[in-house]
Structure formats: structure tokens, C-alpha cells
Amino acid sequence: MRGLHLAVLLRAAAAALALAAAVVAHAEVGQALAKRGAERAEREAVACAEAARWDAAERAGHGYPDLFDPGRMPGCH
Image 1: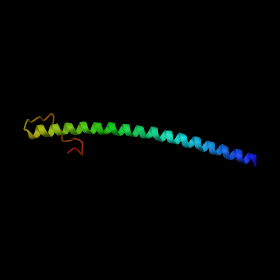
Image 2 (image 1 turned 90 degrees about the vertical axis):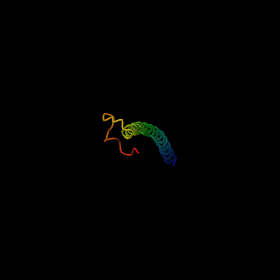
Image 3 (image 1 turned 60 degrees about the vertical axis):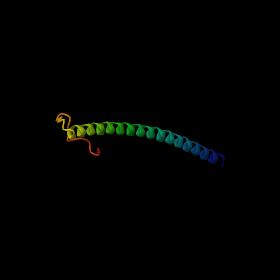
Image 4 (image 1 turned 30 degrees about the vertical axis):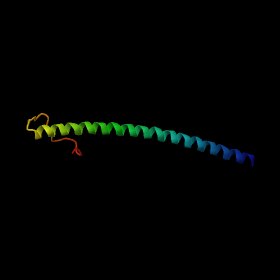
């Protein structure tokens, strides 16, 4: 019976270690995804600001054909 209790305790300890490792990995992955999302949002904001500048130049009639980009990122209003 003592061997059975030891086996159960060892399995519980192994499960606790696995759970702790999973929690740490989840936190690290979450931070990496958040950082990547923030970087992507920043790139898209810069691209949309540039597209708005091009549109303003076109509407003002300044005629900057080198600034106008019909292939700008979708989603920029």
C-alpha cells in the first residue's frame, strides 16, 4: 500500500510541474503575441496615415503622382 501512495504522490508532483510549465509557457506566448499585435497595429497606422496624406495631396490638386499609391493597404479610410 505504501508503494501505491508513493506512486500517486509522484504522479501528482509530475502533474503539478507540467501544469506550472504550461502556465509559464502560456504567459510567454501571450506576451509574444501581444507584442507582435502591437507592432502590426503600429505598421498599419503608419501606412494608413501615409495613405491619408496621399489622398489629401490628391484632393488638394497638388498632383503628386509619385505620392499617390492606388495599391494602398485595405482598411484605411
